Length: 288
Image (cartoon, rainbow, N blue to C red):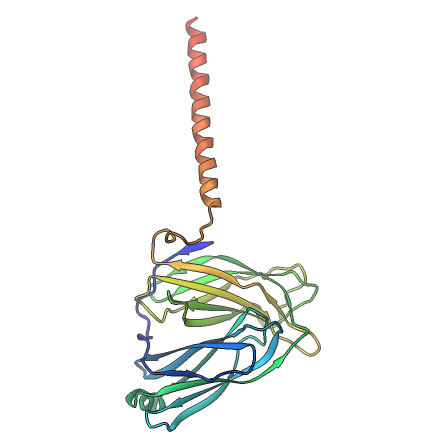
């Protein structure tokens, strides 16, 4: 499934700052990718993700992010949890941190660097169900942002009260440029087994790189664990955003739309031909 739209102009996020990012080695299956961006506020943002390259699910993953100046002095240190509570094998979860005002100014003026380290995580062998289904319905585009909207279907036997849908955006190099999320259910509402959310989720996204030609978006969905009830996730949905035109040569494309268009065209041509033949027969019959 491909969605065509233009990259959004007017983003407050500027091109990547050239500060060095140090990723500490992790004795385990987890892998981290991060990107540092800065704004004219000023503020410094770290957009990252933790990828589980192992064979066992993990949970309670915490990442320590340290900002240094050019003399090696710590400007700020923060510990943040991944957005998803459980990361299944071959899946990812976003992590975001930021500093602002005087701290950001000190970081930028001193050509600082950022160090990222996975500080905590637990193996979670029992895993988590993956019976939630994201049903993307399309996108809309305004002067300031793009929106992704759709529904969530509960294919499990459990009832859920808290569901989050995350959208992770990637540039042409596969580096995450932004993320945002949406609570699917309003307080007091529930998603029952076999049910679909009554209202659409709407995720507004602002691109961090206005000059990009192509973007990819991964949609994640997860329920939050409550008490003894385990959570639930869904398969990762991937959408492609292109700056106009069809997908580049060599990229996968859903040819079912072409087949459908061909069938419709042939049906129309056949109908016109059939009608003309019947008219010709009627004219000949009248003349005889």
